[in-house]
Amino acid sequence: MANRGNWGGKLGFILAAAGSAIGLGNIWKFPYITGIHGGGAFVIVYLICILLVGLPIMMAEIYFGKMTQKSPVGAFKHFESKKIISKQFYLVGWLGVISSILVLSFYSVVAGWAWHYLYLSFNGFSGTDAEVTSLFGKLYVNPYIQLGWHTLMMVVTVWIISKGVSKGIEKASKVLMPILFIILLGLMFYSLTLSGGMKAVRFMFYPDFSKIDAEGVIQALGHSFFTLSLGMGAMITYGSYLKKDVNIVKSSIIISILDTVIALVAGVMIFSIVFSYDLKATSGPSLIFKTLPVIFAKMPGGQIVAILFFILLIFAALTSAISLLEVAVSYFVDEKNWTRKKATVVIGLFIYLLGILSAISSLKIMNETYLDFFDNITTKYFLPIGGLFTILIFAYGIDHKAKMEELNLNPLVYQLFNWTIRIITPAVLIFIILNKMGVFKA
Ligand code: PHE
Image (cartoon, helix red, strand yellow):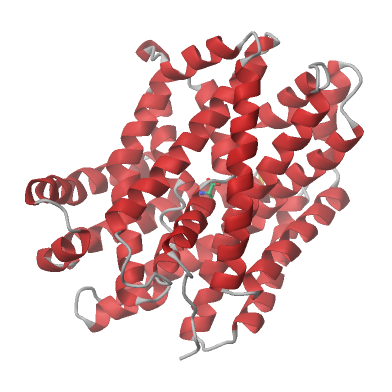
């Protein structure tokens, strides 16, 4: 078998896994969905979802990886050989590989927008509000510019992955993640000094339950999943490079806390800026690409804040993109015995070509752009289905003794955990999937 590689150390693993989790989901998506769904109450529901759904699946995925030392397809094959599952379950591993390819193809295009906005920030945003806002529309209808940035994003991602687990992923995460933490903290402290700072904190942490509806609950559930990179085997893959001495429970808790704190901090920062200039929190997906630049054009020091903000966004996207590519690459390395270089270049090129569809916003499939289509089928269906099977196999397939030994929880906590993963987590996931399929409307 080809040499698969290992993490150099525990910190490297934590930073890489946190890097995977912390991405566009935290800095772009979480703030805008919180804005749409009214703030505090949504945040509380989201935190509950992280605890009851995200955290258990994260533990299950890391456990599968660490135990089998394989990426998703290999891990499920291993379980079949142990008679824990039947052969059809390979499909779940496969679904993970396919999801990672689809997600990266559009994720790279959205990350490309961040690159473009970094470039725009260097010239500074100026002009009327309408002019600044229209920059996004101009980018969106221009396939050439989007392709240019998509190319750059994929080249950097492929380059990092081709260097391997410890020299590529781990090294990049150790450089990018601390810078990301520092920039974000700096921006948060700065934004709290603005007049809207306290209003933002109140908006995020003071729950008004009359503002959240069923749609908000479903969003919170789905997002808790995407933001922790679950349901497609990214954490199985990262877990498979672990040496034996890492505590799964502790690592999963640290990764989930880091991801959650970064999302909350990003939210406070963005809403402080938005409220200071009396703008609306409800503008949706364009919140950071249309609303923020309008303010960057007005606020003192806005250009520097803009540059730092978009660097932050690019770093966050990059450490997630590498984890997406790694899932597909590790499949070909593990199961097809390809060398890492060959797998990285071939799969990277394939994803790049697929991404072209998302970069051309005039192309449509079933009345949606490819970007929305790939986003919807993966986040609404593939990831929750992947997660559901993962938790079912973990809860019902793996025997208690093995889990107790590895997780090392006190017996009472283990019982609580056991019932959560047997009943609550799967029930919640089935609820999301059926709702998305339109079987019933919440
Ligand atoms: N967690 C990443 C984010 O929040 C996205 C992602 C999903 C990465 C699935 C890998 C796997 O942006």
